[in-house]
Length: 149
Image (cartoon, rainbow, N blue to C red; front, side, top):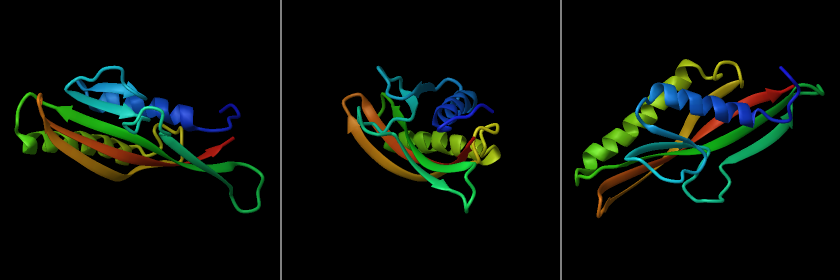
């Protein structure tokens, strides 16, 4: 692997690919969306334009100079907006989508070897009735441990 200051770009790319693979038919966006379908997952986006979506901390492992360890959190969100008032169905679908992605991370926590480990660690739910129907948004964090070379 070529020398890199951070694994963030490779991990974001792998997360987008994983989401597209396990959630066919769902709009998957790398970062902030320009427009949203009824079901969308945004990798590396908090829901607030311009807000930091990846927070990285670097440490040295023990007394060695290499490799450097980095630990970071990637904020993502999943949203479901349906033309119906059934909040329970919308809420269930948004959590189903998050669960599918979490299952993929559990199956391959290294994302094909681009990092040491990933894990979905926290999530927040926001739900409301809009003029277009029920909406549910889950903002979640994927924690990553990796080593640069």
